[in-house]
Length: 63
Image 1: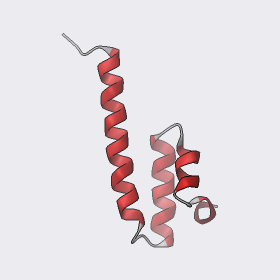
Image 2 (image 1 turned 120 degrees about the vertical axis):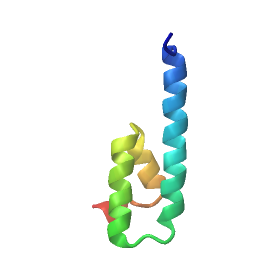
Image 3 (image 1 turned 90 degrees about the vertical axis):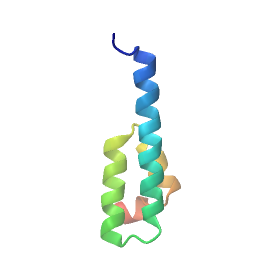
């Protein structure tokens, strides 16, 4: 029997949160080109990407 839709969504949220935590950790040592790549990955990953990018101060680097 498969998982309920609620369980799937919870799993997706947890995975997304873990990925964002990993990316934020890499952000401190990242070069400008790596910061652009991180912003691109965040945009693909989450619907609230512009808020995250603004909070991480990547908006100036990405444009």
